[in-house]
Image (cartoon, rainbow, N blue to C red):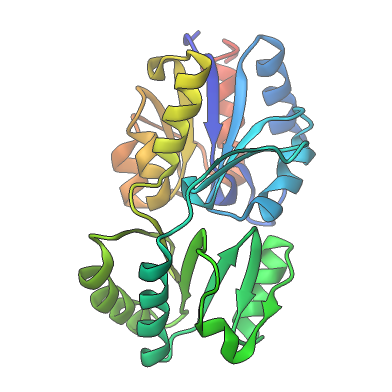
Length: 270
């Protein structure tokens, strides 16, 4: 069995199946790992309010949740905020200005609320997938009054998304962090904020060596934590960047890849 004290798990396309569910098998394995003294942390790009129900569904008590790709850390049940790293408001405003000029659809996240300029098919798809309700601001959306935790460019057309990357990355990468969390999401957050940095801080506070941490992920925003530990796993459906950063590969999200790896390496079951 591996000498593991903490397991950090991404949600979408890693722990969650494609139908946005967690299997009973996965819940059982994680409960048995916890019973052996292994801590569990959720690490996701989701908002806290969109991630919290899945932490509750696992039934593992007040587990820490790394959300907004590392820009916020909070406890699942109590809601206690353990860490917060909002963007520089001036930089975030400039990103919005460029997006408005190019006509991109964008979303902002302030005080764990989702804001949009208008409600359209992308808004509705995002609300359904994440279980949240957006606040529609109209023209007021384009003028920030408070620093956001994240600014999202959301485009389904790959040509438009490529343009968004080509335009914004040279302008802002020295002042803000960016990650492609999916084929149609380009996320901007605080410079240096990442799942890996948030996880490193959590482990330091708890006296846990990174060599005794197991991580699971599937996308670019998981690379920072997959590269931290020798016990890192990419699910079979992961993006190439995640597979390159991980030490091991496990079964897909639809085949309980997380549960299979934890059962084998932490619980010693074949």
